[in-house]
Length: 232
Image (cartoon, rainbow, N blue to C red; front, side, top):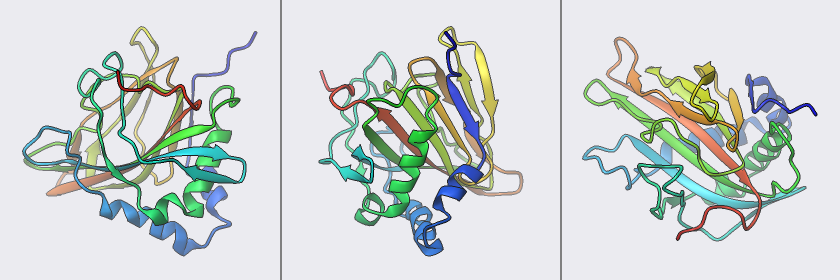
């Protein structure tokens, strides 16, 4: 029996094509919403470098059903830094959560999952901005090499400006690297099977000559309703 590859890495053309039928203004407003992310209160640093919002959805064939806002939880076994803690992030803005752009992106990503899609009827959507200055680097994944504790995870680049670093690396379950990539073009995407791979991202630093830099990402976790990790 042939096993499908545990990840897919594709350029911006996939999401560009899907979003092409929508008004350009709607897409611009969607990507512009990353300018309104509050600081992540769970970092434990004096100066915030990560900003985020989160939302939970049931996936229907023609729409996304927004579920009640809840804390994001990961087990200690998959996140040794923040695992075992209910992290309550700010909710997605209404225009983002209820917009056609998000619906289109989620449905497109679901069609590109690197494995069976049956039962993948729920998703968590994270809007994340990581900043870096000449005085402090940003850490997209302070937990290091890890799993997220879901079935599939999609990583979509929204913006990369005046930064270096932030190389994505995928590993097999023995921590042997299987893929390295520097996401550089908006809407470039990696979708991975979180049950078969570990992943990590190197720190973000300002590009040469820049005082600061910004990296915006959208992460979408896919899983089956009722089987997401719950607080102990």
